[in-house]
Amino acid sequence: MSDAVRELNEIIQKYDNIVFFGGAGVSTESGIPDFRSVDGLYHQQYDYPPETILSHSFYRAKPQEFYRFYRNKMIFADAEPNAAHRKLAELEARGKVRAVITQNIDGLHQAAGSKVVLELHGSVLRNYCEKCHAFYDLDYIRNSSDVPVCEKCGGPVKPDVVLYEEGLDNETISAAVRYISEAQVLIIGGTSLAVYPAAGLIDYFKGEKLVVINKAPTPRDKFADLLIQEPIGEVMAQIV
Image (cartoon, rainbow, N blue to C red; front, side, top):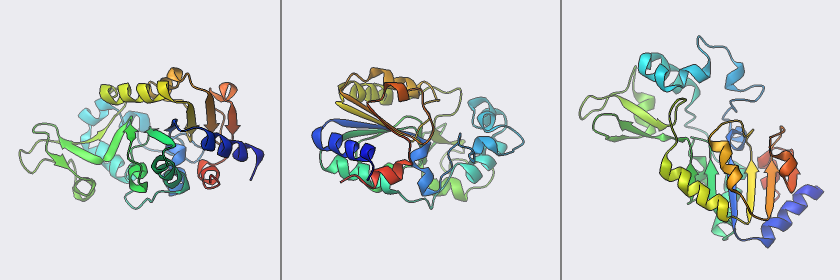
C-alpha cells in the first residue's frame, strides 16, 4: 500500500460525512470506455462526431442514426460493478459515504448496492415515451429496431439521459449542491472535470479534505489535499 492510499484510508476512518463525485473513469474497469481517454469514443471514427450524435438537435433531426450509435456505443448491459463501485456501496453502508454523485449513465453504483446516487446525466436504464410518459426499461430499447415507439400511444421513446444542448435536472443539481456543500470530505474520482455544468458543482465544497483520484491531471489537482494518480478501482480495492 502506497503512502497516498494509506493517507486515504486514514481520512475515511476519521470522517463520517464523505461525498463521492465521479465520472467515466469509475466504470472503465467494468469495460465501459471513457469518452475522453486515448482509447475512448472521442478518438474513434464515425460519420459524425459523438458530441454531434449525442446532441438534442441530432436526436430530433436524425433519430435513426442516433439510435444506431446509442445501441452500439452507449449501452453496456453486461457490465458489472467493479471494486470502486462495491467499495463505495460498502462505505455508504458503514455510514461513511453520504452520497455518490455521478456523471455516468450506466447504473453500476446502484447495481453495487449504493442507495443515495445522484445521476447528473441520467441513466440508460430509464426510458420514457415523449407523449404519454410511459416507462420502458433498457431491454425495450435494446430489442427495438429503428426508433423505439410507445406501445400505448405510438409516441417516440427517449432515453432518460441528458444529451448535449439539454439542461440538467434541477432537483438533482440542488441535491448535489446540498451534499457537496455539507460534506467534510469530497472525493473526486475517475473524471477529467471537463464537462460543465457538472464539474462546476465542485465549487460548492467548503469542507476539510479534498481528495482527487484520477489517472490523468485535472483542473482541481492543485487544490487537492490528497492527489492519487492511479486507477480508482485499484485504489478503492485497498480501502479497509
